Length: 277
Image 1 (cartoon, helix red, strand yellow):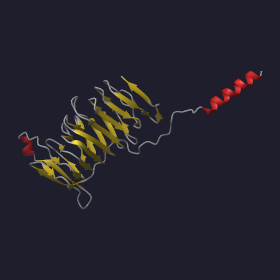
Image 2: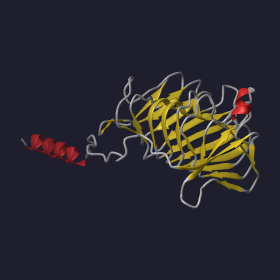
Image 3: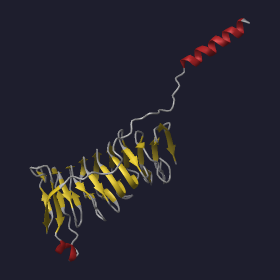
Image 4: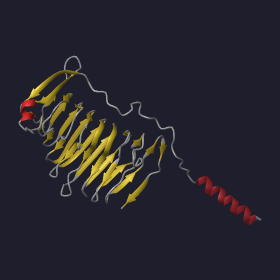
């Protein structure tokens, strides 16, 4: 009898010392719905050659009344097959509060750079392209992007770069950010906050030296995939909230990457797990 009592006490103590982790419910949902509200346009400027933002300078397109200037490639240049970029940011340059119309070859980044408050509603087949750089730090803050057939941000195979997207919104696009190919150097693809709606894949990491991170405060809506990791790439998405699961569910994984994931289905937390393939 004494043995049975001792065994019962041991069992009660063991159970009381264990921590039970229950699914989290009632997570606050982003009050937005993943759709984008575009800033009003005050004027449109057509350019015939790339606007080069010099090293250490800021190009600001905001007008006094709070509207933005929309910059577009001159239609004559497009008719003659022009594909030069609309903006070129040299090392240390900043592009702030502009709207982008028809853009030829998009926006090219040549080193450390910041894009803040850039609105690009109809991207088409071009991107913000990180062309080159050695350990470049590229920041995109409070940007709004839509309609990219490929990636909103594309890293070239030669860019050793660390790209941070902070509180950016993306809709109806292929990818939010994509690494270079299998021969690329170290590349960091970092998303902090913001949202995406109806994108094929938020992060596409395509080589062994690519590391993708989707941090707390990011919301995924609509028919969207969270990430794809190929060829030994690594992606961590431990804090992303999938408000509306896409066609393949809240988690998308492909290829031979190592990924750490936790996803949201509605308001219910799916327990953190580690996948290795």
